[in-house]
Image 1: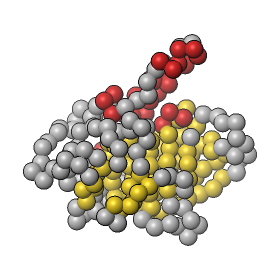
Image 2: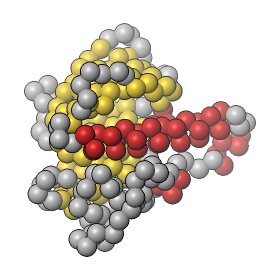
Image 3: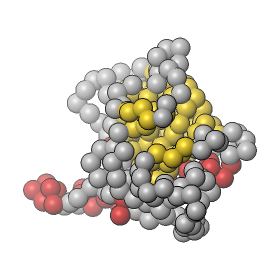
Image 4: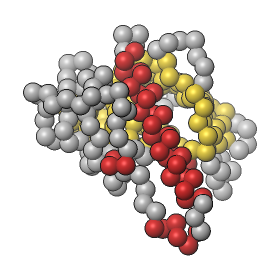
Length: 219
């Protein structure tokens, strides 16, 4: 499922941070990005949203929080990966943009969002950050798809025995090395002068080319 303007957040040191759900691990964050969304529902109605802010990837959700609400009131977006039935990367002419078209599992609600077209545009100097996000997104979607497939192959009365994805179930992309930096902190939200930050345990400077190792914590 996808949610617009319903994301629970907290403000820490003037930064808006998503509140983690149970057993959620935060993998990636970046600021600034321009986030564009075209949402369609079962009634074939479409609505577009656009704002600048911060993007987050967890093992469970894709999250966007705007620096400030757009003129039409758009401020937050969250997508639960387990509700994605198909995900297709869209060809795009702009090198610093990440674009994907998503089909979501059906819902009983007539107004449920069924199709999403997301475009996340990075500063031209942040190409490494864009590639890092693309790698994490592909890895998380592959893992989520495998779990969903396994669930579909098991009898309904045994589904409760399958646990959801957590941070220990997804590793880093193999091309990224881990580093221990002198200014790592053991808790909290670290925010440097370049407006990068990370959430939870073992937080680094926000160097997106070497993201912190996966972890599971509440924010």
